Length: 327
Ligand code: HPA
Ligand code: ZN
Image (cartoon, rainbow, N blue to C red):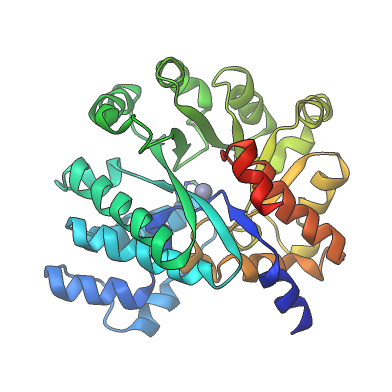
């Protein structure tokens, strides 16, 4: 369609993407066979049928099971290259991607194999597809503070610019940002950039904690921020960037219908909103699909869509000089 071509042509950055969530059923089957991993599915169709979620935890159970097929450095390389190839055709000029090292080290896959496989693909993808990128390591919030600290220590050799920041993901309810205040303070001391998922399922109070206690540089999701008017005003004033993921919110039943999605209300409240895909292999689409999913239901104009794309470049961790190439 005309709108699809318009969206694809706009230079944009993806700022909320879990690499493990870009594992397509085809690659999952291929790696399961190669690595002799038993899957509870026989066909691609069966896999896709299992992607029917009522909430975040429903999804996470399937997501952690899916990532079991990722075993060696080559698997993480293939996963990352497939993502970059896909989005390079959608106008993504820059991607700041997450991965969940604890989802792999807990299964006996060494941190270095995971990380180096991803980094080698990010380097090759820059050459092959012209997509610049950065890597952010996420802590699993359902695990302990101590386990997060151990992961932070294990990652230290890569804090020379190869891992640029830390994030916080997994089961939100019952695991507030405050649980990781000391971990994030330590990461800040190491000059890492800080992001955290907050206000996806959790209340606005979790968004406030991410900002005030963790001191995040960027907020992932943040949909429920609007429930706190004072906080919304503060974050509009401070220019906080929000990485919103429409198809994710729909698939995880955070919104009953795209017409009810808060993206437009967040924009109208003066928040710097971006559109992202979160876990595109599980939620039904990459960047263009996410833009298209909200364009009509929220009556977004072409100028609104262009603004969302500019926000993604401006809200990235690129230098001002690097941003100026794309805006
Ligand atoms: N929310 C929390 N944790 C996650 C997500 C998400 O959307 N995707 C992968 N891990
Ligand atoms: Zn996410």
